[in-house]
Length: 113
Length: 114
Image 1 (tube, rainbow over the protein chains, first blue to last red):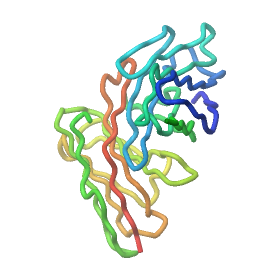
Image 2: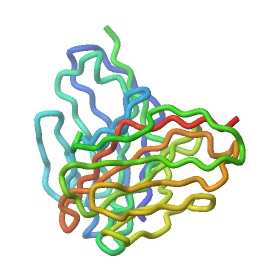
Image 3: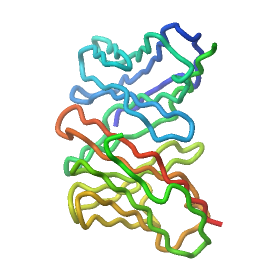
C-alpha cells in the first residue's frame, strides 16, 4: 500500500476554507485517494475520493497534483461541526473484490470560532 | 449511513466469556468488514466478507471469528474475551467495489472486557 503523510494537527477559523494536505509519493497509477473524517465517538465518515482529476461534492473538494504525489482536501466554509480527525488513505489491497483500507493517524482539524 | 446497524452499541463483559457483535445492513451489499479502533493504533481490519459464507482474515484477526450466513448480517465473535479486546468495533460495507470503491461505516460498538 502507498504510505500517506499528513500533519498531526491543524487549526482553521470558522467560515474560512480549511485546506488539509496529504503526501502520497509512492502512489501507484491505479490507486485512488480517499478522504474520511471521524468526529469524536462516531464512525468514520466518507468525504470524497479521486484518481487523477480534481473532484467536488457537497462536502468538499479534492485537488490532486498532476504527478499524483500529493493532494489537498478543501472544506470551503468550515464550521465548528467540521472539527474532526481527517484521514487521507490511498486504496489498499483488493482481495476477492473486498477493499482493505489502511488508516494512518490522520490530521486533527480544529475549527475555532 | 448506508443502512448499517450495529448491536449492541455498548457492552461490558467479563474475561473469558464469549461475545458476539452483530452488523446488520439493509441494502444488500456484498462486501462487509469489521474494524477495531484503539488509541495509538488507529483503525485496523479484523475480518472481512465478500459474500455469504465467504470471509477472510484482516491484519488483527487472532482471537476473533466471523460468520455470514445471510447477506444482511455479519457477526463478529470473541470466543473468550480478553482485556486486550477492549475496544471500539466498527462494521463497514463497501459500495461499487470495482471502481472508486467507497466504504461506509457504522456507528460503532463499545466493548469493555473486565
